[in-house]
Picture 1 (cartoon, rainbow, N blue to C red):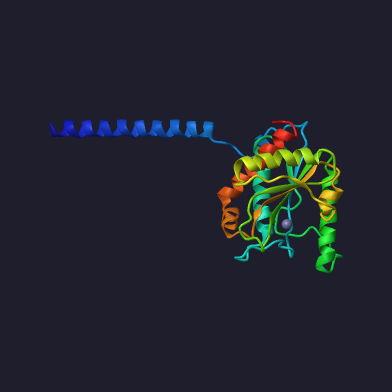
Picture 2 (cartoon, rainbow, N blue to C red; picture 1 turned 60 degrees about the vertical axis):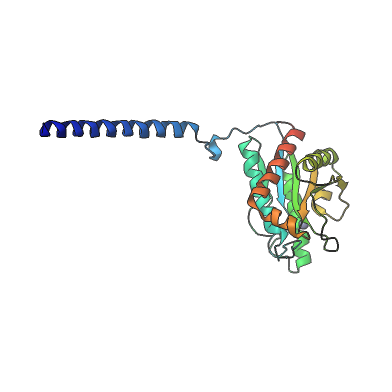
Amino acid sequence: MFPLFLTFKKWTALYILCLLGLFVIFGAILWRGSAVNVSRSNIVLTPDTPVLIIDAGHGGEDGGAVSGDGTPEAGINLAIALQMREIARLAGREAVLTRETDISLHGEGAQTLAEKKREELQNGGAFCNEVPDGVLISIHQNSLPEFPTTQGAQVFFGPAEGSEALAQGLQERLNATVNQREKSCRPIGDEVYLLEHAECPAVLVECGFLSNSEETARLKDTAYQTRLACILVSAAMDLTGGG
Ligand SMILES: [Zn+2]
């Protein structure tokens, strides 16, 4: 009896091992089949729709507006812009960034901060106008220290044809999602070089107020940045064709 029992245990163990092996193989097949492959080469881009040109405002020495806890807007702008590009590309829309790291777009010759700023904006503008069929979305954060409770996202538009309609559409989506009070989009005025000189539809999104500590905490949160990026990209895609 004893040797027979051993044999039985051996076969049972082998059977269980075979079953486990099969589970592992099937599991691997299922995982490979369902995994989302985000590599660039596997994404089918929609060719006949405008390229989203995403500008992360400021960068390098110019951090832009700064929150009460010392967070400059440049880093938040870049984080949202990078997410927007990935979301757009995953959805099949070509998207390019004016900057991908914490740099300024100025050249070697610019010395003072004012010169660097001017050159950065001019280079950004030239970059935008080199894209034959583009839509510019510039990402910024607002600040109004004298009104620390003011919050919400607001869209501004440049003079190029199509800018106002794009701004209105984006503003409606932001009002319906992240804004506690409705805001209206507004023309930007000629002080923002990038929008003023863009030849394509161009908008600037002030995603929130760094002068509001509660909104600053949200704007620094990666999940909220993803939410903003999704809202802006999906709205921009709906409004500029390609769905
Ligand atoms: Zn800014």
